[in-house]
Length: 170
Image (cartoon, rainbow, N blue to C red; front, side, top):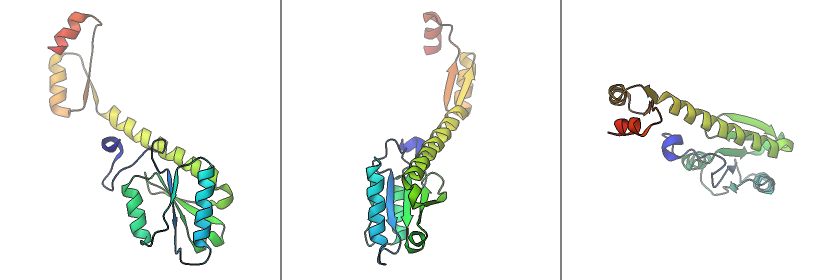
């Protein structure tokens, strides 16, 4: 997972296996109602079956964002006084940092949809990387030169007989 999905900012964990699928980050949590709303969001997401965490620490918003990005949490849920006044929150995907503003009435559905998008983005990127590093060889000499030039994986043609397997193995 680390080698396939990690980037320069840390882990990138697939939502299906991430210990924390979404982290709720209250913005300006010292303002009235923000922390209560963040707790309510956390409880709603947990009730929907998601692995969710609320970070109500005194660390700055920038520190919190960097911390959970480094840990590979697939989705951030940001809520501050302005968003809550409009009945909204902001979802931020770890894979591409795309921000999506959602209505709080659609919270559970929107979070589930974003986690599906993250999972698909991660699969597509890994599949593309794999496909770009598989090379086909029709002889031992071709396999050796492809390996030397490109690295990656070499797909060799095998007739299905033990003799062919032993020849390539040697």
